[in-house]
Length: 190
Image (cartoon, rainbow, N blue to C red; front, side, top):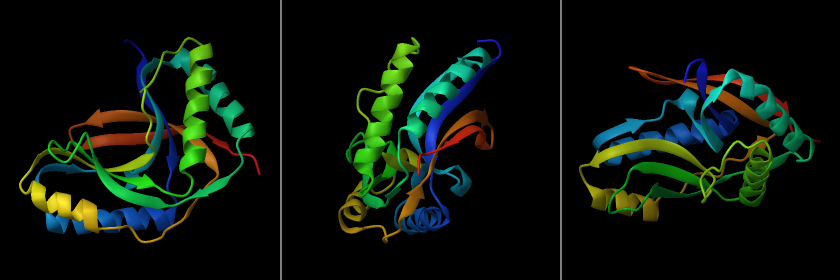
């Protein structure tokens, strides 16, 4: 698509939570290996909706959707939950950490995004939304048993993050990895 940009809508982690997510990555890196692509600390985010390649002309409509949702959503707090992998431990492709406190609010925001995007004929997103921070993408794990044990026995430290805005990012895939550039953000209601 000519002039198309790859975009997504997300929530950013604050400094304390981002540091804990980096600490978690360090722990996991020490415990298991394989063909694993670790998310750069500056790229860690919670995706509310991956939009894919969109035309620049669609940006204004999507910004209006984000603004409308932000005005109707009060600021809240989230914290980290359990670890997991998609699709499962037998064939792990994505290592993630979920959300405990704030889970319902994030699901509500996602549902509103889906509903409002449908009204502008944007198309349907993932049928199943599970709020999480992606820590790594896995092509091959050398020791799946170690990964399974870590998933069952490890827990993140308590690290709350204030959720006070919704952001939209441009994503560019480069040989050095993904580069995310914030192109819009809207404050949540007080």
